[in-house]
Amino acid sequence: MEPEDPNRSPEPVEGEPEPVAEPVPEPEPEPEPIAEPEPEPESAPEASAQPDVVIPLEGSLVSRKGKKVVIEVDHPDPPAAGGKGTLLKYFEKQVGPFATSGWLAIAEVTVTKSAGGKIHLKIVELLSKMVVNGKKVNHFKKGNRIKLELE
Image 1 (cartoon, rainbow, N blue to C red):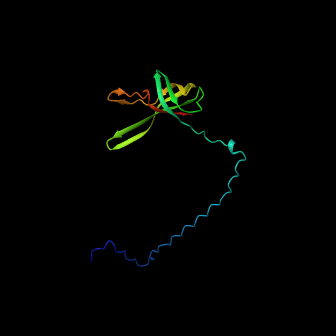
Image 2: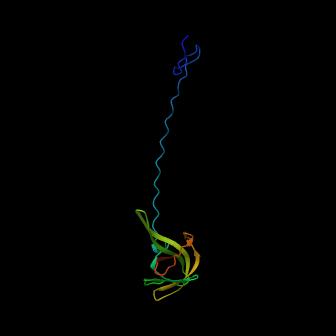
Image 3: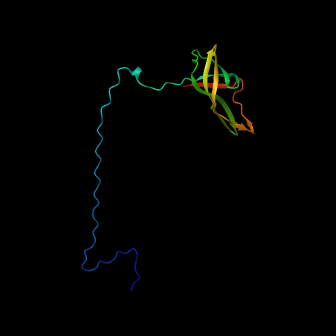
């Protein structure tokens, strides 16, 4: 008797019909979506609800005493008292052959007063609490380049 070949199909047994593979039906193509007509534009586009554009005010830091910060900006339209926003500090860092720069959010602030190109702010919450060599980083040094983004 010969050893069985695992790749060989079994021999049909007498009296049993040979198994026949049924053809697999092809899937029906999906119907194409019906294009809906575009809605007509509103007659007053100024009234549509679009998010307010945040206009950042760039300048430099003048001073900080406790929770009070004074910044100087060159902007013709100073923000009104009571405005809330985020104060960001510009940074540049050289790490080996790579240079990186950007804006770091340092505090959530509220405008208390603005006059003569100077904006007085009250710190609501400090956002950046960095420590380098065991010392807290002072982000509020006089002359730092800053940006105020109002909500």
